[in-house]
Image 1 (cartoon, rainbow, N blue to C red):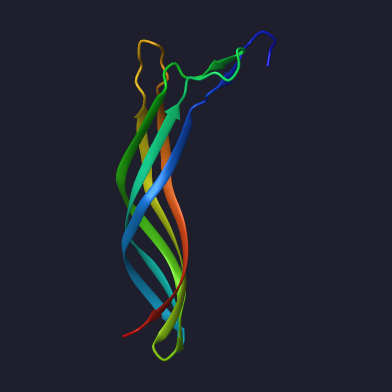
Image 2: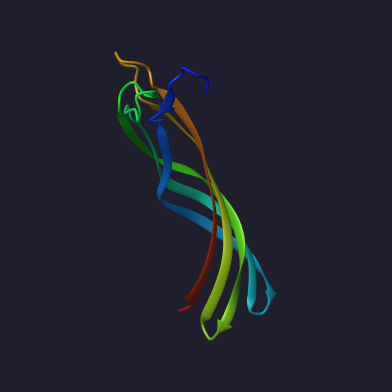
Amino acid sequence: MQAGLPAITALPISSVQETWDGSVRGRVGKLITPDTLLFATGGLAIQRVSLSASCGTFALTPTSAPWCAVARDETHSKTMMGWTVGGGVERKLWGNWLARIDYRYADFGTFNQHFFTAGAFGDDQFDAHVKVKTHTATVGIAYKF
């Protein structure tokens, strides 16, 4: 920092949150032993995503300057559709009990959002471009009726 210039405080803060997701998938597989199924899965994925941004105007010391002209908070949510693929292994344990381990990748595209508007006290607006992708690994036990 150069002498004489104030420190910047109250920088903008942003976050991305997944609130729920789901999928409709098909599954194909091959028995690699009489009790073990190796499978691949794929289909349609859907997810609710929220983008949030906030910016404060307070200065911590007399020699610091706020980044934002006006205090602002915004959240924008969107339900996004995409595709998913994955695979795993399922094994019969005993009786009708099964155990499964699988992995799934999903791509929902890009969430583009404009935050804040220019005002009389300054221009703090910005555009967010968030690529929404997930990697999910699950372990489960099931009972076959």
